[in-house]
Length: 361
Ligand SMILES: Nc1ncnc2c1ncn2[C@@H]1O[C@H](COP(=O)(O)OP(=O)(O)OP(=O)(O)O)[C@@H](O)[C@H]1O
Image (cartoon, rainbow, N blue to C red; front, side):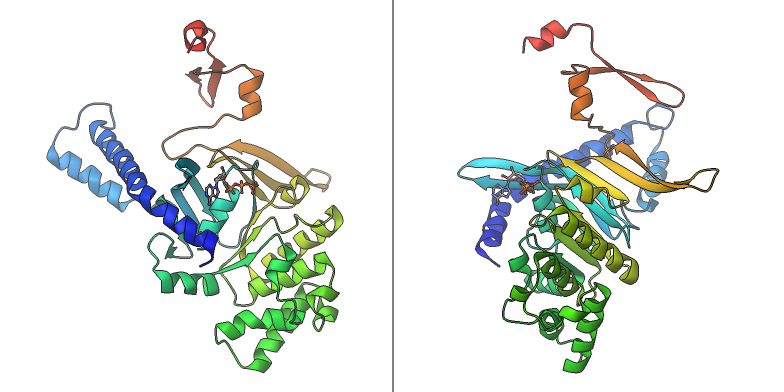
């Protein structure tokens, strides 16, 4: 554990009890509400009625039961110099097996915090997080090490951080397999060659990082991260140090690996062009998933294919909806809105009545 992670783990402890209490209180309130509200709005009639509803509740599949990554009301509180920062404030996120998706968001929105938790480098203060069946809040030190070696692969922004400068590209890729005690030397070399070949680096296998371009180094880093066949590949701004043409090549490499190997990939990026390259982009705002863009190919009557993108706002499990900031600003929404349920949509209007009292706050 490096100094940063040790600090993170320490910071997690004093807040953990408080955050867990808050989560428990929220759950208790939810349970009480569920018990109070009968389906027809009447009070529960009998114990048998309550029991049958509790049994139905228990029989419901758990949130995210079929997702490879499931973050449920994830909270991460940091304390620095007596000041508390809530980096994640009840973040929900589900990622299906085999997905290639991007996470975007303004600086400080919580992207790296989320990625560090998914990578097993940091521990959430409260909530739940599962990746490929591993409970990220319950792992001990040994399980955490195994998780980082076998379940996830990581590509960092700094090209130099991903590779050892004195090893060739092929040796860098073989190293994680060696550390895991996987296969004989020849088999490791063969797999390293295959991965490098798949990513268009067949000719570069015997070169050291200093003899490769930044883009080639990042592609070797992808091969290193894939060496042990992880269930999930995580990348934090993998194109941050590269020009846009090279960034496109890196994304092509992620796509190839995703298609050929079926590895699930979560990529944090600032680069909107890069984010447009994937089918699903999730935006984080203030430590929560705020909106999502889904892209799909449509074929028109003449057989012409086009990519159609649609933006969705997220509704969390308690029914909370974050309005996009530009909508809030455009209509001058301050403290409350009026809602109207229509047959197939909900109307949202700015409060034009009594804004004076709330404005005066
Ligand atoms: N170890 C830490 N100690 C204290 N505060 C932290 C720590 N790590 C992150 N934070 C704070 O948590 C919030 C979220 O930070 P995070 O690094 O996750 O954001 P980000 O979206 O990745 O930003 P960027 O795009 O600038 O990297 C920020 O306010 C940050 O200052």
